[in-house]
Length: 313
Image (cartoon, rainbow, N blue to C red):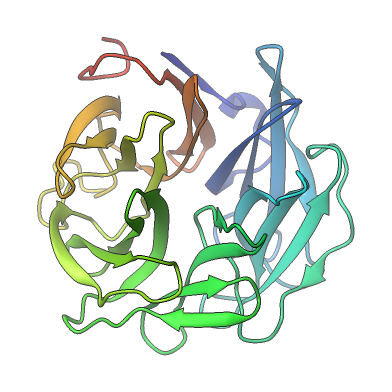
């Protein structure tokens, strides 16, 4: 397994970074994140780097706003192979809106920003699923009227996920399954919530799981062999040993349709290892995540790798 930093802290372009997204292109693995003085500061913009021939390019700012901070970039390819970068703009998650920039050359250059239709935020943290009709099935959420999970079908339909247990969900992650779709949500309740859909348009009410969650983002992906993997902090709010509640960080495999078995332990120690993003192809699983809010970490795991307890095993 390969494990490295996108850039060294000593040459970091900003004092703080967070919320990376990852995609695989014909020109290399690309990641994007937000960085600036601190989360929510006016100088926070979107940065990007590409891994080519085993080396990460120097991070460069690709999006900024004259007045407000930027948040939560999400990378995704459309049916024609164009790379889209969705991100949020605004003084806080309760007041932000979403914009998107598009690249025809795998992230070397980007078109001018386009604001999404009113009422739509696009993929809020995790990658969308590309539907057969070319639209994105976007895992989204809102925070201006409580925490609510939403599934967006393109910029045409909004489906709010019912939350009868009052879990307080945001930031879903969606995977395809033989029966349709599964989505897990971060919640305020100490566990992940789960919802299911046969077609992507109608979703079950959110249900609590026995998967712990310290109110931190997760992401999931389907592998070519049909397995589903989840990258997450497998602790509840009361279980944190280190005081940060966003450690350890592990990649787990769905074992029986309900529970997960640990596959790779990426981090285990004091501090914050959080907001992972994960994609997969036939050969590898690719993960990026926040490392202590100082840099972005990258892991490349062979899809046929044997389970291991930590990154050095």
